[in-house]
Length: 219
Image (cartoon, rainbow, N blue to C red; front, side, top):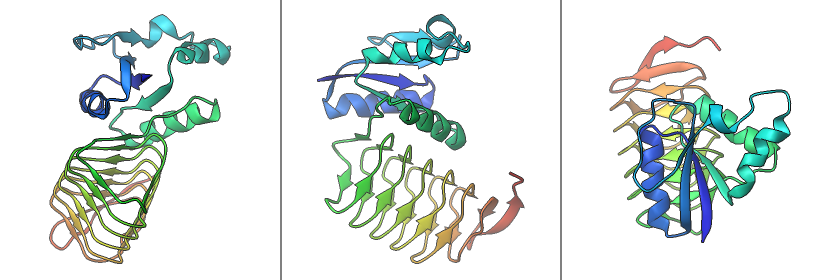
């Protein structure tokens, strides 16, 4: 049994807590947040960054706080922020948790990287790779031979067909579908209920049935 620290107390933090508890692998789960208004989560300690981290030049003082935990997981919905924090932890030899709900269906031939969370009733099929710090949300389906980049969020009830590639930090919103053999770039958003039938370039919002480009992002 291990000790887990969850970064973030918002909605993502709460569902990550439930997922972690469901695994039965942790005897002690605490939270760290920069939100001074965060409400109590019964049975779990909340630490506030301004109390336990120095935010000064001596980062070693900050990292000593994490020594008390076996694993850390970043539970922040924003893809860019979640990936950035996760990479920072790895660069400083802080171990990230990979959480898989016991009711998820994960192929023995798939690969799920550190810091990712796979929620209840999600499916990851053979020879698919889930990158670092991804969210595979409730009842999402990632079919065979897919490549999901770092920091991607696959929302609830999304269906990703076979041999799809999704670039880092993209967000596939609730109820969307992506047809087989489609490539979606980095920093993209697929709007809720969208049906993606063709390749999508990086840094755009697509939506509709079939999905078309609605907005370009400047990065």
